[in-house]
Length: 117
Image 1: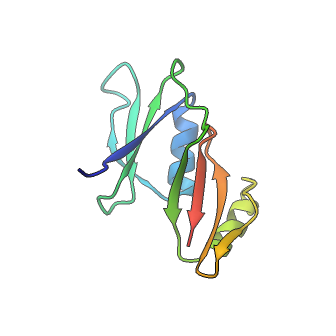
Image 2: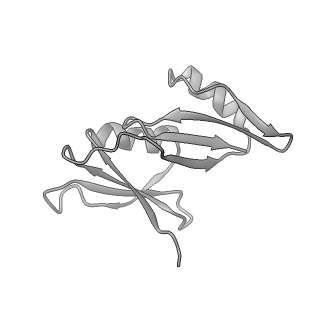
């Protein structure tokens, strides 16, 4: 079994798209905004990894409770500072051991995004 995507129901697809493209750095893989009644966009890192599926769906919004999606970066402290500069208010840096550092930031739907190195 292989994981292929994580679905996020969002109230504002364009705002979520902007976050995942401009802040997280994902690219649109499949764009079905014009093909059906419910706008859907799949994004990934361009290397065929796990996708984020964004669905504009007012009736089944995610509240973010209990969910975290992790993204690896090479320089977590630089990304932390960059996100502060963007006004995203990331959490303080956490380091549970000498080899791991991470922080959290919320996406527009309230999903906790973990940035880790």
